[in-house]
Length: 534
Image (cartoon, rainbow, N blue to C red):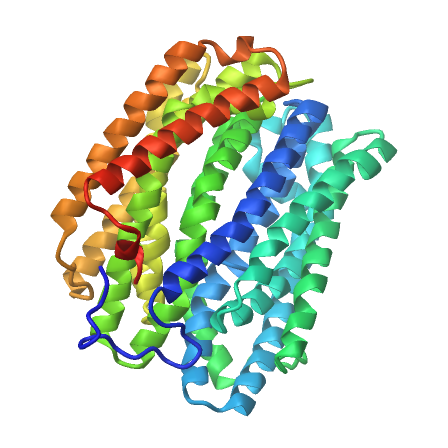
C-alpha cells in the first residue's frame, strides 16, 4: 500500500511524509486508549455503586440526549462541515482570513447552541416524554429524568466550543491534546461519584452535575492551546460571513447523517423504556464497551483522515485522495473485524470483568452480554462508516451521507419493531437484544449504502492487493477465534470466578493470546508493518 517515490504526490504544508497518517492515527489512538481505560474505570464504578434501573436509568437518558446533540454540534456535523472549509482557507495561506473565519464561526456556533440549550432546559418535560415513553406512568422516574436533563443540557455549550477548538488543532496536525479531553471527562465523573453524588438524596443527580462540570473543564483545557497558535477565537456575530454561511449550508444535511449511530441508539433507548426495568441500562453498558474499539480505532481514523482528504480535494489531487481512502478502508477492516469478533467471543467475560460487582448482579451481567453480543456484529461496519462518510464530507458533499442516514434510520426502526415486538409480547428475557441486533444490522446497511454511492460516483479506485489482504485477514481471524474459544473452554464460567484481579488476569490472557494469534498469522502470511504505511 506504499506509494512509489516516482508517483507520490508531495504533501501539502503541515502534512507529514511517509507514514504521517499512520503516526497521527497512532497518537490519537494512544490518547484514546487512556480515555477508554479511564472510561472503563468510570463505568465499572458507576455499575458497582449505582446498579441498574430507577434513578440510574433516568440519569442514562438525561446523559444520552445531550450526548446525541454533541455529535451534531460538536465532533459530528459541525466538525464534518467546518474542517473542509477551514482547510480550504488554510490552503490559500492567508492567516488573517483564517483567523477572521474562526472568530465568526465561533460566534455563530455559540449563539446557536445557546438557543438550543435554553430550549432544552425549558422543554425538558416534553423531551423526556418523547425519549422515555415507558416512564409516563412512573411519575418519580419521569420527574428525575426531567430534573437531570435540565442539569446536563448546558453541557452541550461547553462541549461544542471545545470541539471547535479541537477541530482547529486537528487540522494543524495537533491530535494529542484534543484526544486527551475524554480522559478529563471520565476522571471528572469518577470524582463526582465520590464527592458530589453522596451530597444528594438521589445520588445519580450528582453524576448529572459531574457531566456539566466535565464539559467546562474540557473547554478550559483546549482554549489556551489556540492562543499559543495565535488562533484563539474572539466571538463575533458570524451569520453574514460567507464562509460561515457555507459551513451552515454544509451542516444542514449532516445534522442527521453524521450522527446516524446516535440516532439509532436513541431510538433503541426509547423502545427499551417499554421493556423491563433495567433494559436501558443494559443497552447503555454494552454500548460503552462497543465504544472502546470504535473510539480507539474508528474515531481516530475518521478524525485523522478527514483533514487529509479535504486537503487532497482542495489541491485537486484525485490520485492522492483515492490512495488515502484505500489506506483508510484497509485499516478500518484490519482493526474492525478482529475487534467485533473479539467482543462477540468474549461478551460475557468482558461484561463480568468490568461490571459484575456490588449492585451490578450476575443477571445484569448476562443481560448486558446479550446486547453486547448482538451489537458487536456491526463493529466492522461502524468503523468503515467512519472512513466512508469523511470521503463525502471532504468534498463538501453532505447530501449523499444524509440519504444513506435516512434509509439507515428507517431500517433500524423497522428491524427494532420486527425483532423486539415478538420477544416483548411473549415476555422473553433479553428482548433488549433485539434492539441491539437492529442497531448492528442498521450499521451494516449504512456502510453498504455509503460504499455503493462512493462506487457509483467513481471517487475511489481500489489499489492492487485487496484479494491477498482479504485472505490474510480471514486466516488471521480464524486463528484468533480458535485460540479464544480454547481459552474460554479452559477457563469456564467467568461469573463464577471470585476476585477482580483473577478475572482481569483471565481476561487479559484471552485477549493477549487472541491478539497474538491474529498478529502472528498476519505476519506469517506475509503482511509487514511497512504495508500499513500510507
